[in-house]
Image 1 (spheres, rainbow over the protein chains, first blue to last red):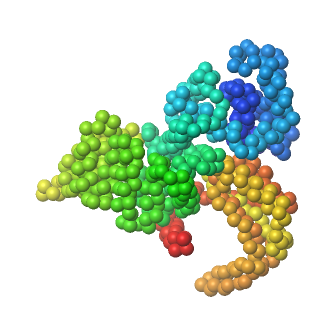
Image 2 (cartoon, rainbow over the protein chains, first blue to last red):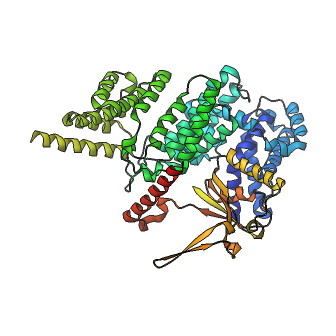
Image 3 (cartoon, chains in turn purple, red):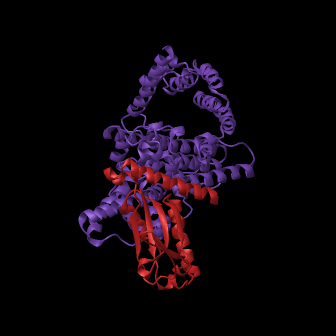
Length: 431
Length: 142
């Protein structure tokens, strides 16, 4: 095995094992920052040893053993007291010593309890949204700081700082390493789902820069969602989120044209949709709705959005889309979220189901919403509806306004080309 | 990225020898790991080639040949479709699979980008037609 082969293998093992390793260590040392340091030390040990010895048969247990040896060493040298960690040295030593015989069990974590506790920790509301995203990708996704920085087009030191501060915040706030129960569970779970959805959206529609999509982030989010669904199989909204992500991801290759330009949903070539992901998404949606039916109550926001996405996925052609059902689903979603952005989407569905004039009426009611001020999709939708009503000069102005507001270069091009088309139409009408 | 993991046939799989309860339990556990990690997209085991057919194309002529087929090393007994970050990750996962005496192959699935300039608009269109047909067939079966 050459050194670079070994390094690539170690990197792959790290991606597979690091979350479980950090989760198990956090349970033992009660400090996620220290747990990550110990795991990193184990990684360094692997980088020293494995190129010669080869990857061991059970690499996860090897890393766990190395991390624990390191913890015990640190403690004996009193280094840990200096770090002023919340756990007292002696107590920790006892815990570690008693944990050594069941090393394999510790890393196995068959029910995934530790992993789930770690998920709730990295998505804790005490952290800022950016901090939650970075920490989740780092500790659960096993991404390096550099990879996270590249994915979010943020300077690496900024991301590194964010992660350091997040770990400090968790320690200072004494956030317990546990799965919340009862009423707190649903509140905390929605924070977890939000983090995963934000990661996906960052990949699906890059908010800034030249790339319209960054598929790697979408894949990370899909994997995280599937992992959480496996850990909380009875929570309908987790399956709702899985369904939403799988169905949206099924359109990834259809929503970019040959020159890298965005292709909108109704113009997409449905043959290019990924039918394996659609199939998986519809199955997850069925699980979500079955759980809600068994439990009683209404569909949650992710399940409703997945149901809307499923309406599109089931339509063989754009013309076959069941817009009336989509409007009904948006009614439910609007009631749940009271979000002007959802209302805007609902207006689009109403326009498709009942004509552009009905849609425009709703959009005009939203124009005064402070939340939508500066939101490029408001003028973009309005421009679209005006164009459909033949009011091309007004449509052009709205599309140009939308182009000025978007931060995505590809999207700007698309909006400007539509504005130009409206301008040509307007002249045609005048003649 | 996606990879297809191809489990090669051997004399036992071709003879239709069923797995022991223990083997099935081990494989079940491995599959569960893959699902829990969000890696597994699909996976199936295949009947022996005695239940398969081949369609031989020579020029305009099509000949249907019934199985079994003899060159068992070239046959496959099952497959997975995994979503992984790299070939290295796929290798590390596969090393954990509970196989004893067999060869298992990992092949990256083509993404449209992999075709580069060879993948002309005409080819792309042809590919899209093919996908449409597959989708239509799947929808008809559903």
